[in-house]
Image (cartoon, rainbow, N blue to C red; front, side, top):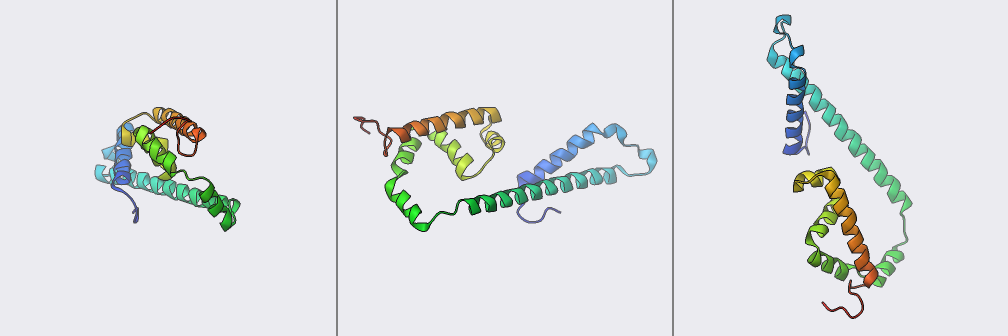
Length: 160
C-alpha cells in the first residue's frame, strides 16, 4: 500500500493511529449491522494509511517545489564559490565548536544538514520540541559568537 521508501517507524505510526481511531470510535461499531469487526478495523486502517500516504506525497511535492524555487533564485557564478571558499575556511571553527559543544553541534547537524524537523529531533533525543528549538537558538548564538571571534574561533590572545 505504501510503496518503497517507507520506514518501519512510518508503518508503526499508521498502526498506532489506527488503534487511536478504533478506541475513539469503538461505540460507533455495531455488530448487529452485519459488518464483522475485522472488516471494520481493516477499513479504518485503510483510511489511516491512505491519509498518511497523501500527507507524505504533499510534503514531498512541497519540498521539491521549494527546492526548485530556491535553486533558481540561488544561481551563483562558479568562480564566486571558489572565492568564498578560499576567503573563509570554516572548518577550524566548526571543528572547535564540535569539540567544545558536542551536543549543540549534533543539534545543528540534525536540523540544518540532515533537515530533520524539531519534532523529529525531539523524539529521537527524548526531549520536547520546544526544548529543541530553544537549544538550537542558543547553539546558533554560540556559533555566531565563535565566528565573530575570528576565522579559527579563537579570541585574540586565546590559545587552544
